[in-house]
Amino acid sequence: MTTTAQAQGKTAAGAAVDRHSGRWWALVVLAVAQLMVVLDATVVNIALPTAQHDLGFSDSGRQWVVTGYALAFGSLLLLGGRLSDLVGRKRMFLIGLVGFALASALGGAANGIEMLIVARVLQGMFGAVLAPAALSLLSITFTDPAERGKAFGIFGAISGAGGAVGLLLGGVLTEYASWRWCLYVNLVFAVAGVIGGMLKLRDEPVPHRDPLDWPGVITAVGGLVALVYGLGNASSDGWSDPRTYGFIALGVVLLAVFVVIERRVAHPLLPLRVVTDRNRGGAYAAVGIAGIGMFGVFLFLTYYLTGVLHFSPIQSGLAFLPMLGGVMISATTIGSLLTPRIGPRPLVPIGALIGAAGMVYLTRIGLDSGYVTGVLPGLIITGLGMGLIFAPTQNAATSGVQHHDAGVASAMVNTAQQIGGSIGTALLSSVAASAATGYLAGRIPSAQTAALAQMHSYHTVFWWSAGFFVLCAVIAALSFRSGPLAVDPDAEPVLAH
Image 1 (cartoon, rainbow, N blue to C red):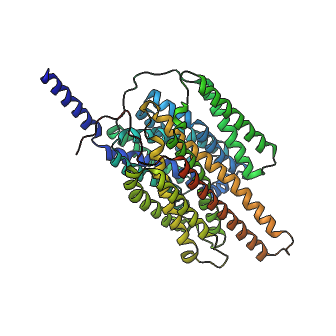
Image 2: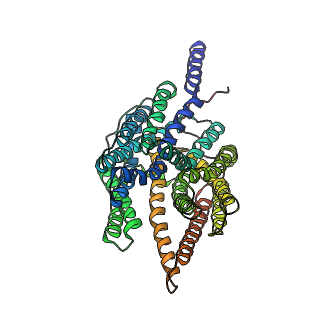
């Protein structure tokens, strides 16, 4: 019996060593895939004016190039996450990578607006498969708290800084190659990801496949489509348009029906235990609210750099690099080292308040401000804050969850960020327009007055963004539990190396 026990112990130990070998290379593979998905949200936006001129489509078509991706990505994330749990995370990760690459190739070869929109919708669909698969693979690969903190620090830094990388990459490719390469470049990421994924990623076998919750799928997808579409209309047509408030109301109703269904079915698409846990619920709320504030940086500061400081697309992309540096520094040092020891509760509120301070600093910029004194300090401060938000929240969002729920728990992170970004685009665009209109009321029209009205709209947006970061700090302080995050309940023993 002793011999048998020893043999079983050696077998288990060998399995643990085998399972965790190559895990840092797995992180590289997952980080590359995450970067591809995150930067695609901004890299294509930089290329759109050139693509519009080349293909000759209208402004409404241009809007659908953005909206088509957002609708498909935002609405299918929960389904993509649950498929990862039911079919296999590695399998869905590779399917997502290959599909995203083929859709990107289709978009790069587009000969008209219809083909480009179809490609963007397909990108969103496969991105909704890829993103939760990547995060859930990360969650089950790194189960030791200290290593998990480091891994999520790197992954969170990429999630927070990917938009800035997209601005730079889009500017470089559009100016020196072609707008088409803003889509073709995904083939490079995908090839590297597929090869690395096949060699380095490990997944657990799926013990049993529960039936898919089709009523939940229909109401979740329908509700998220209606919500994202309504918010997209708000940014272009205003809040009083029937297509805005009608679709938003429909989305809210369908999502309420979805919650009722999930409470009653035997195998829900989104088990409510995933979101009702204080740490995970707090993480989703913090990511969503921070996503609203983050768009105040990317969208309106880009307007300022190009419209007031007359930066080229490449210069605008380079201008955001210091913020990327701030995200990387705080996420991979303070965030990764302290999260395993003290948990997210002190870190996320502090990061959100730092982000708010950065936005308040940006309210000082004017028509005669320079980049170095007017913009740079605010970008660095905001980046440091964002790094402390994204690394601990992504860790918390998947901590303590059983592995058969890891995919859908990961999907909720991306869903919260996507919805937050949609709300941020719509709400802050509306706030900016109202602020500019209010400033012009009663003043003599002139070029100087119009420029000052524009600056007033930017200042107003930055104040609102600061307010959302403060709200994120309050929500995080109230919702997160004190102390380290819960240990992975399904983890194999992690051996010392």
